[in-house]
Length: 186
Image 1 (cartoon, rainbow, N blue to C red):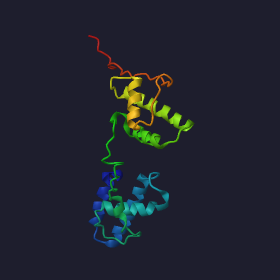
Image 2 (cartoon, one colour):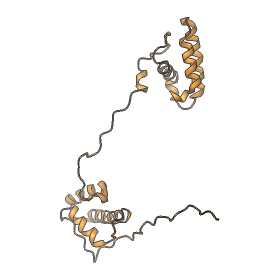
Image 3 (cartoon, rainbow, N blue to C red):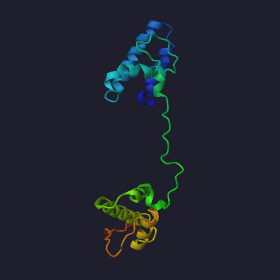
Image 4 (spheres, helix red, strand yellow):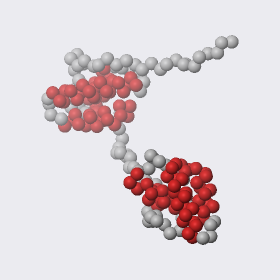
């Protein structure tokens, strides 16, 4: 456990070499005091002593033979790796990847949403997000007609934008800063 430092680890190694069991316990209590000073404020106060004794058990490689003042049988939980998180929608293929999963999910919602003000607002949000994504991913076009046709494609024809009536938000292309390093004068 590198957070305690090499000094603590060497002390634990030296304590394991002590032949008297009672002296080993006393030396371990001193080490716990030093560990507590090092970890002040970083470990939950409620189980501080339990946690420190668990850490000592782990640092010793489970070889320290003393009368443990706390149950250290659960010390393995500090070494256990968490289970990997499952990837969301693994294997699902996005129809137009440059728009992202959020736009695809919103387009699916638009397919089944009833006519009304909320649907119109969502159409505005999705269309403007699609246009921003086109600009950000540099697909060479900020064309409103392209956004309208691809929105229609994503919603299987349930949403058709009237380009004469629909107003897109103004989207500024992101300009990459030129070389920001200063040139050396010669």
